[in-house]
Image (tube, rainbow, N blue to C red; front, side, top):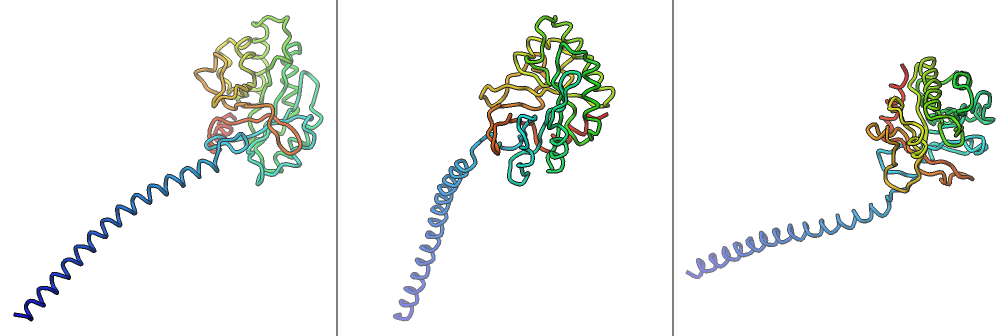
Length: 270
């Protein structure tokens, strides 16, 4: 009897110990879950802290770039693709019927040599003949390649003759664009501001062309001229006060990913 009693006592101890172990495991699981939740919350908070949305390191999918002219001196030579959050650089090429930006040739070559996607623009003057302007621009960018951003016409207040009618302005600008399109076998881009676009570009025919919008509204998205409201924008010039290297630049954002940017460029050439 005593042996049986001791055996029963031993088996009971094992059973109680087993139950306690099982209970302890369940408690451990619950505690682990709660700890994991709290740790995840804290880590998530820290990630948000160290990854703020900023103009020089925009969150995906945006692609960041700048635009320059001779006013930026030798800035391109000081930029590094591995250090600066820049994928593309657009430089001024020409203006009116005869002017060529003094830094265009060196900028155009340096942008490519440093591995950035490059683009060139023409500052359009409404008082000058549109055909002569178009041919002048095409001659300057004669070596443009199919992986370069399509030619851009800069249509803004500083180049507009207020004495001309809106109809005349639109007709002449369209003539300029069509020459670039047909001779260059490419779909050009229009650069303008919200006010300038709404005031002078009312013909829906212009929304066939991608919009590079200048709008420093401080919002998450730019405001667009009416005729582009259903088309959206190609590039947004978000500010003209971006500090880089030793100067101040215009900061530009492509509306999409880098892959989409390159695909857009490729599809712009006919």
